[in-house]
Length: 397
Image 1 (tube, rainbow, N blue to C red):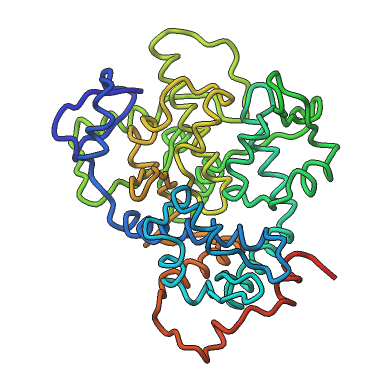
Image 2 (cartoon, rainbow, N blue to C red):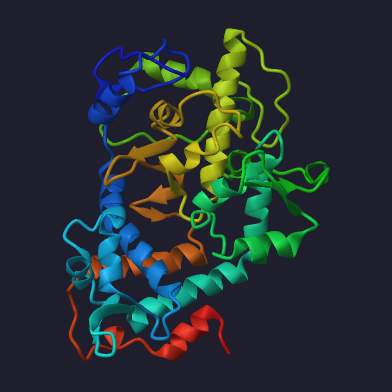
């Protein structure tokens, strides 16, 4: 689905009907494409949130009775966590989330979570447990999008948070649903393959998220949608300032009409005709669209989803896929990684249809945004972390 620039990169729309793209064009497009300020602002907020979450997970996983970790330990991980000015400097930016204290017994500073942070972590954990049927359904759908109905367990581990899986999902989801899943040894040492049980995929017909959107569009009271026009269409919304020429609009319309095999349907034999290749590339769009629809926040790092490319039988570069469809996906390059958003799921930087796990995570994001603001030692928001709350999070009696 590659293309070559026809005019300025910032106003180009990229679709399968254009000509072949050179290898350097992708990087050029990232630099000069039309940026969406709403998503860029959101990603700016997420940059530090990701670091906060990484440290929070280390604290909650700590076996230390005080539910804390030493600053010396964090400093050793500074490069990996991208803490450019060291652990202490980063932690002090977020007094609503972290508290630094000195352990006289060990003669060194430690870090623990505030009550506010623990309450949010507990809320997220409870939301995940309450949505366990949805969690199982997401994992089934993920496996059904592969031709072999299987995935490396390590690939699932890459996106466990994005899919809203509990951190012990190998036990609480896979082992507890042996009628659906089984783990097998992989071809490489110390690797495991997660598979659906035999013929489970034949017992259920699943509908992709984009198909639900098409039905909704057709059933609206004021709908003027031509059902034959929308049958293979995807919802589009282009970045502000991205002007489409009549020629490009015509190409978009033509692409929308292009038939393709859905993400849960058997693909059959691959053909090498131009029409077959275009249909395969549209199927790749459908698979990635469905993958993002399954995530809690309708976003994922490009590097993480790339681990599924082979198993989804996507022959093209994943990043190019996002760049080629700016009306469906938005690719942000803020921070150390590239992150893709499902454009239709967002409005003004928030999910249109939020879920309890997402709402808990947004509360943590709000604390990150607060920084030092509204902080004072007597605030109930930042009092010392109550050990009973930590025990409640960990499921202790």
